[in-house]
Image (tube, rainbow, N blue to C red; front, side):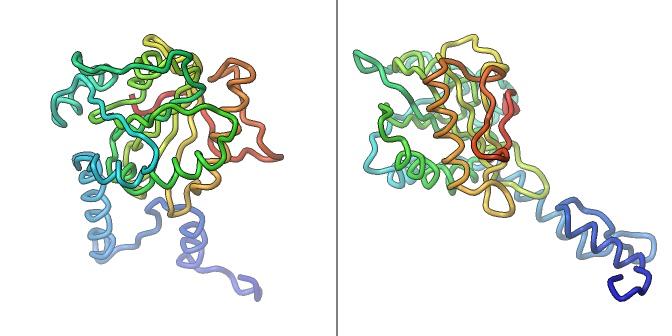
Length: 257
């Protein structure tokens, strides 16, 4: 301890717990975990399950995105149960989808996909998009596309059909037992079906409980978008160098399928 007194086991666990959201040093009551720790775990598990199974309220999201125009699309997965069992269908547009792009195309199209946490999308997608739009001067933006039962790669056919040079997919990330409403962004230059995971940049862990803030995520996305349009690449060929330190976790992989 700071006064020279040796730290007790409880003190050492408290120090470790202050540095992580992992469940460590929970203690025990007899031969079992304390009841409060059990109840906390059950609550976190219930929130994660709810995040996966909750249906995105598209109408409410459209209202939150005004005045920017919004298009609705669906994946080839007919319902949530099928979507969870068949990741491949979540990457493909429904066969009846009609999307017409501008004659000259656009620089960027923003796609909002429910992914594996509609909870994250419902609460954070609109504020993040508004923050991005306020920073994207000089870049032409297509309509915002809201995709239901969708995974990351659904942005490829959407971007191609809308004639976008760049596609950013905002998607609910797979919930865990510490955060159930984390949002991710996947950026792809020259979107078209068949793009590989290594051709995308990912900004992850966007949430309000110790994660990446909305403003920091918007700054990172806008910097990557401008650099992508200038260099005509994304993924492993585009590294984040915004500021002296990395502004966000920027990966080149697709964690949401």
